[in-house]
Length: 373
Ligand SMILES: [Zn+2]
Ligand SMILES: [Zn+2]
Image 1: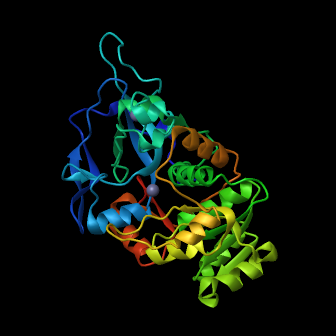
Image 2 (image 1 turned 45 degrees about the vertical axis):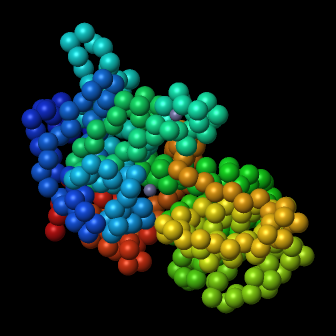
Image 3 (image 1 turned 60 degrees about the vertical axis):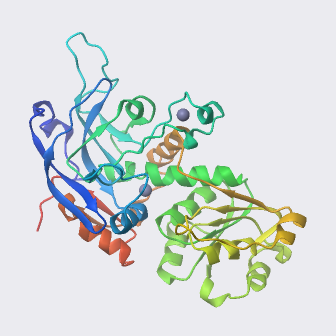
């Protein structure tokens, strides 16, 4: 805990609009620079958060290498989306209008989006599909401006006992909770999680907390071991030893009938197809991992039809699941620290992304105020 800055010691009250900060700015694929840029100015209801801890994410690695049509729009673009920090400034006008419900010094975690609650999809309760979802980037920086919609609907106080790097897990954990809800995982269900990156690991843990019996599936022995220790998976299956789906089903599900729910957290067409071969009649497959753009899959229509397989997918998260994630983290029902391979100064974000890409790290916590060596 000693690495976490004392909010009292922050120069929060002294943030002037003319001041500069250091931030990662995306120019084009493979060109993200850590450079001086003005500290963002605030509008009504907005808050400025000093980033205490940001996390690497597979999506950031993809963005770094290929760009992103939705996440990165104006160039150079702020970068990074999982973070927690301390409120450094709140919007104030002379009449006290448009002020935030937060105060300078508050420890907060903000989601990377918030629904508008006005559009067709919000009216249907599908707030993750909101037409006006403005995805927030800029976590790899000293400060990040939290837009009014997010400050109002999807920013939360972080309890004092919760380290910032743990609070920053709200976003990835929230997408997992949404994914389990989409698949309608029930207590006692036999759930298979394919792919054990950070998301797969959180999925295993969250499914266990839902009372499921979880089989973790991957090829990497270390990831399988982590699914047992961190995720508390009931079974671990090394996929390289099971080319035959029937044998896997027979060994790991009652009567070999298949899993009630299969979650694909890899994002490859071949594993999407394989997921279908592991599910039982009447079961559900959540095609959770995003495949490369333009890829296609082939499914056996007979299997889908006569066996009543429910294919679902899930995108992003909702404020409901973001808050639920914070509750699971705050009560230590999910303690994600085993997923943090290392901590690095913010300036080293590029090295951190490369280590994640090379498979040398699950997640790396990037911090401000850490001495660079
Ligand atoms: Zn993420
Ligand atoms: Zn909306």
